Amino acid sequence: MTATRVLVLNSGSSSVKYQLLDMRDSNRLAVGLVERIGEENSRLKHTPLTDGGTSRERTEPIADHAAALQAVAEELAKDGLGLDSTELAAIGHRVVHGGQSFTEPTVVDDAVLAEIERLIPVAPLHNPANLTGIRTAQALRPDLPQVAVFDTAFHTTMPESAARYAIDVETADTHRIRRYGFHGTSHAYVSRATAELLGRAPEDVNVIVLHLGNGASASAVRGGKCVDTSMGLTPLEGLVMGTRSGDMDPAVIFHLMRVGGMSTDEIDTLLNKKSGLIGLCGDNDMREIRRRIDEGDERAKLAFDIYIHRLKKYIGAYCAVLGRVDAIAFTAGVGENAAPVREAAVAGLEQLGLAVDDELNAVRSDEPRLISPADARVAVAVVPTDEELEIATQTYALVHPAGKNI
Ligand code: AMP
Image 1 (cartoon, protein in one colour):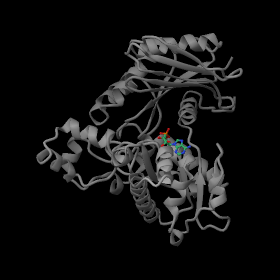
Image 2 (spheres, protein in one colour):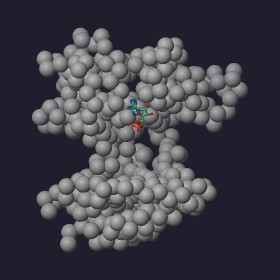
Image 3 (cartoon, rainbow, N blue to C red):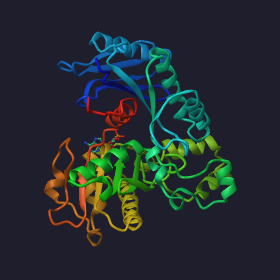
């Protein structure tokens, strides 16, 4: 029997998200999440999708990632989808930071693990958890290929003019300071799916992808290759996000240290966790912000306006970077669901060929769709992202180069 299943693992510091897919038809067999690993009240939510899809929940102490994966394996086994199955072809891992070393998905060996570890200083929050996930999965199925799919890989095609900060070159190189970009798996998937929606080959299409979730980033993609993106050394740069500030004068940090007496860690927390929409108005959920605006709340309105202003600046900048733009694609939680954000982001940009049709913009759907008027010069699209499917596809292509022709 040909092994056609791929388990996708997204390991955070205290959580593991997973999906099991059958790559014959990209069908999802099970999805789930383990939260609060290491606490007394850890929780596993498992949803088999093979028959009916009734979720099961377990709340019990789950000490570490090894115990979490063991619990996941038990749940999968109850549905006849056990990880000991010969049908499992590989395990695909989301790895946040691949630096300049990893430009493609990579089968994990000791050298790969060592390199992911070496990158911890530039991704202190993410890479350690991703490594733990890989090591745990290796212990469970040592015979199986483990594939690392990097959030940064899609952005490694950025030219030096976009990837370098204008700081002293030696200092930058010593500390590996450059713009890496993140959400690459989503930008890759969505830019390709947008070309498909237009009925054109990715190589022929220039797309601006706006990944607007709780974290948010924009990218300029020319002919299927990323030429600029809004996140930088870390995910802090760029757009206004749920809890991150995005762009600001770096001197704000010196000022907070010198005048505000704040420590490095306090400023890190301020800018990553207490800024953006939540810092501006106390809410980071766009649904709640829209509800407050409808009730006349001025703070929520200002937060929304700042969010949109920044988004517009990036749309304009990436029109300039690309020269010719064929499509703008909105994706992720806000981009896929918040019609007022899409409307406001392109309002007044008719000179750039951008407009949305109000009726099309109001449609709710899980399918990729156009929301621009039929005669628009630039297509405006909503393209739901699917990072797990992209990780599974890339993983399977690597371990089974014949791809879907099985
Ligand atoms: P993500 O990080 O892609 O899961 O996106 C999560 C964010 O999407 C939430 O914080 C909300 O701001 C936003 N979101 C989700 N659903 C909706 C919706 N129906 N309308 C507006 N915003 C939404």
